[in-house]
Length: 596
Image 1 (spheres, rainbow, N blue to C red):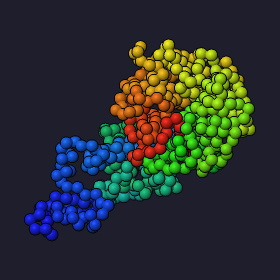
Image 2 (tube, one colour):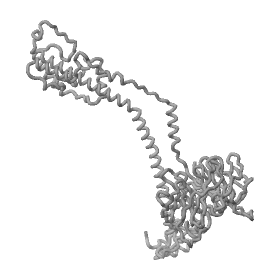
Image 3 (cartoon, helix red, strand yellow):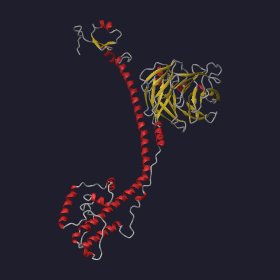
Image 4 (tube, helix red, strand yellow):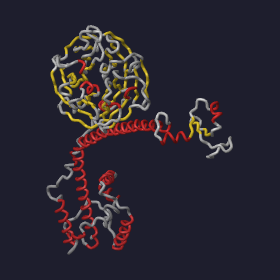
């Protein structure tokens, strides 16, 4: 590129318009206000100065773009890792099914294969005996030119019904010629691989009699040059040689005595299986396989001070879908895959509840909380069957006792509210941090000032138990001088029903408490952000989502104040949830995960 302006002589190029990528000199600037009105342009010296001096990244386009690209890369890499893991899990799922089918096929085929091995052995034994017998007969016939049959037995006439290849009477010259021809023929014929049982069975099936079979394969299977297994038995006189052959054959097969062994006995009883399949069961199996895995699209429905939003985790988009105030509902929202609606109780409108369709994401019903108190910051928990429990809350209209100690419940089918029980006297409504359900029990996580940690209480809602019992306590590693209410406002909690584990973020640590075994341990979880700052004094929604048995994510919806973030439990990494900035106030606002 030229260093001097083509319009103004001897003027160096030193300005660039970023919007149209036009480069000009100082004099060009006079006309830029009209030609490039509203565009962004800057001198190269200013750009260099900002970069060298590490100026405010918000005013430096290059640094700002790098920060934007880095955040975008973090989102993209998190998506890549998640998608790769899901792909692997899908493969593992079908590999397990495939392995099961292979094992099941082997189990069913086992008795067939056992019998098939016996039959194959029978075929091989009988065929070898047939070959040996034919070889013996051929050896006897080959000596007929030097045997005077009348001298063997003048009184006994020998009749043979054994048909053999080449049994016609031949002269010495013809025999010699035939020997030479057979030798050449044997070497020119392709050798049949009889070690392959399929080949042997096929050859036997094509012949109707043993004589036809021998004629067909006289130059291969039954060639005199291919079946000399008794060659070493020949010697001595002719009669001695023949006797040795017969003795060797009889000692090996023992099939010529008075009691002839029926060597077919095994084969004749081994085809006693039949296959019966049920097409209806096959279709049911296909259906069950399809139902065994389903790819859900995960979204986050989150309330805000002035709007509701839907975060599409697949494409990273955010969509405003409703315009009602969601403040004071951090723990007042309920959703479940088995439910057709999302339920929001109390909040800014103390005595109201809302039912939002999971299909249309529209409010289908505005209801009034009757027969029980409404309030702000109510803890709502679904028992997995027919009730949603409403615990604690704050009602500023009740001047005497604004902090509510109630345990009420809402019948999903009848849409009726009723009082159920009250909190234990050791539980202050304003110190409750989390309420969740596991195996029929409703758990209440309460802050303990004296213990510098938390206590967990529970009651069996399914069994109708109303008395709360202290389940366990656990402490956090904090200094004695630390202000406990501030500590509680800075901790984020969520629950994994699959592993029955409570996750608690505090400062740079992640605590895991198993509510079944009561075991707990912590891991370091550094995050260089305002997320765990001492300035936080408000609650934010924390959501747990288990992708599969080996992968889980935790979402923190901080909106404009903290930003939205996702934590990978397996890799112990934080990433921004969405690339685009969220300008909605979401503190003290509820959120939930929905899948389609």
